Length: 245
Image 1 (cartoon, one colour):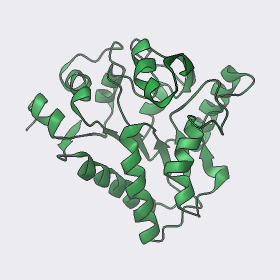
Image 2 (cartoon, rainbow, N blue to C red; image 1 turned 30 degrees about the vertical axis):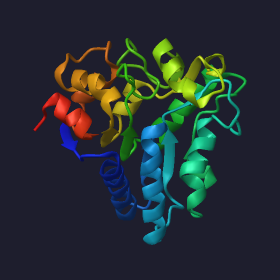
Image 3 (cartoon, rainbow, N blue to C red; image 1 turned 60 degrees about the vertical axis):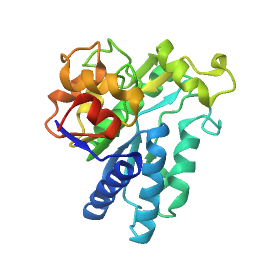
Image 4 (tube, rainbow, N blue to C red; image 1 turned 135 degrees about the horizontal axis):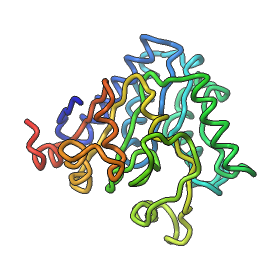
């Protein structure tokens, strides 16, 4: 596991955007695993700018998002469908709708939707690069503590701490969905390369446990230490706290 301190959010986001650009330029039919959340907003802003400047043809690129809230329609303002369109897809004309994959949170049968999504991942994947954030409790995707390392895409219950953290995006905490469709840990681990981006003091504990703690289902992200090609990108606040020099 390669830990890199890139000082601050701007440099870290630009680095990740550049790594994605290099991948897309080198392999036009890249499969990308994408994440959401506040950490990724600048990444997608810089990536969109770089894609346009370099006139990258994205028509053969396939994307899979990690997750979606159960119960939210694709046009709901807090859905990850809307998030991805607003922050990435609408900024470059060559993205192809048929190659963009997110779970349908409002599917009539969300269990079957999860199975279908997992099968699609198996048929088209693995991802050339999977990007990840990390929750304060060590979750990746919406795989909360004590999720099985063997888990595949499924309907998952969100931990109270995750619901609280996500409540800033909703009018009240009661409006936050309590479940999501999420790629499983084994689904994520099939990616050829994984880049995890963690920024800010509130992620210190999770990163410290990831790097120093046991490989345990109590910290879902710890499974990444079993992957052969993982980068953990941090900023000064995390790097200095953990003293990884």
